[in-house]
Image 1 (cartoon, rainbow, N blue to C red):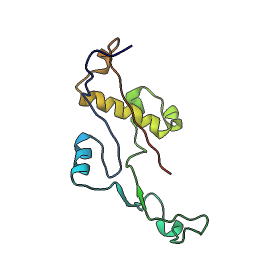
Image 2: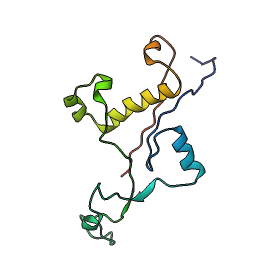
Image 3: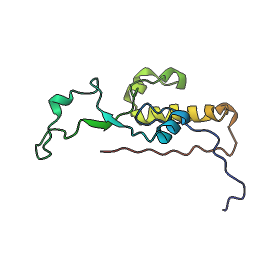
Image 4: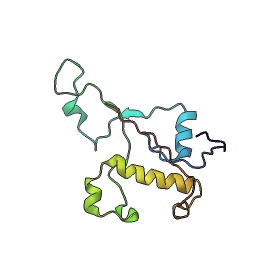
Amino acid sequence: MSIKEPIAIVGIGCRFPSNVVDAESFWRLLIENRSGVGEVPKDRWNNDRFYHPDNQVDGRIHTKRAAMVDHIDQFDADFFGISPREAMRMDPQQRWLLEITWEAMDDAGLVPSQLRGSNTGVMVGLSGGG
């Protein structure tokens, strides 16, 4: 089956390190040529306790920098009709997928309840590093 009609990207939602939470902040990160990598915030873990400069030393981390995404712990489960108990057990990426999909629809000016039966799709890209 070939697609004969044009495809349009009409909305975007995103989360990236360096407090990138929407198309505008993503664009600023790009045009300012900034990196999302920075010093690990003190509220994440104690860098001095776990860091060691020698990568041959087992059980230690070998950098004080990371690409950290903010507010991973914040999710409005009620908004999505999800019980607090279920939300606690969900993978954070699942919670973000719900939020960011909603934001992309909002960015496009679409009302999700009016999309039933339409030829609408949400394209998703996820990445995890290690």
